[in-house]
Length: 325
Picture 1 (cartoon, rainbow, N blue to C red):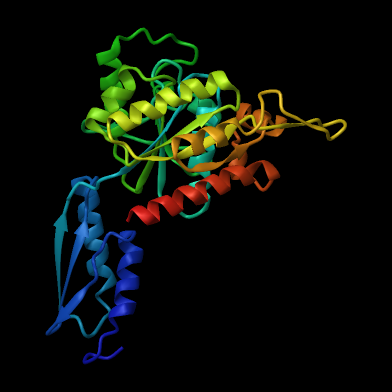
Picture 2 (spheres, rainbow, N blue to C red):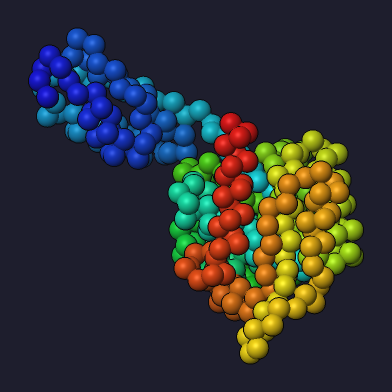
């Protein structure tokens, strides 16, 4: 580049690299480069290091005689996607974990919160059991799971197997701390809600209203009755329903290959049509999903066929998010 014609595209690329995409589009006028840095979530020392890196990166550009850096710490609004069910045991936590990993694989900046305060299972599912989050000021710093997804769970704060005997307000406050953590590189937060329609769900939605909700159910009538209650809860608080997922939808015998439907077939899809909401897909009752989840290796992170339904559901969620924009 020359003094008279600085290459702004190249300069922007270099600045994005040293600031991890926190720099605004640079402007140059009469040799003075001006840019704004988003320093939300950074300490004073981290801000100083970033500003110094910007100035050092621009030293060899002849067209620039001065660098002016403005900093903004505007709080970023996370879009929360709640994963709910009307009852326990239908695979809500497995869907949440695999959905977060699938979104991460598809290039989305995603985090995961285990909001099941009384029965947290995400540390085991995500392979982060035994890890403890740190804190800076009054904010917790999320743990980065082996899959690369930042996450927090009540299971990271108590010993495995320890009972959490808290009343509703205490549980709500604990969930608020998880949601208000320092989610620096996250745009979308997958929140694994506890089963049912109780205090924790209401506490979250009063302060951290989700952008949308995904409901999961097994195909049988009893589970669908409870899923309908979860749908009703989100409708009452004006949270958009992204769609319904059917779990345990068919079992392939590993010995003879015959497909059976111990929990029925197509119930969730029919219920979605009846309620006028999208059907997002089916997840089979597969031994591979169970064994991988128990081992802390959610199948959405691998190349096996078990990853396919989760990637498909993640793709539909991304379509919904794009349409919402």
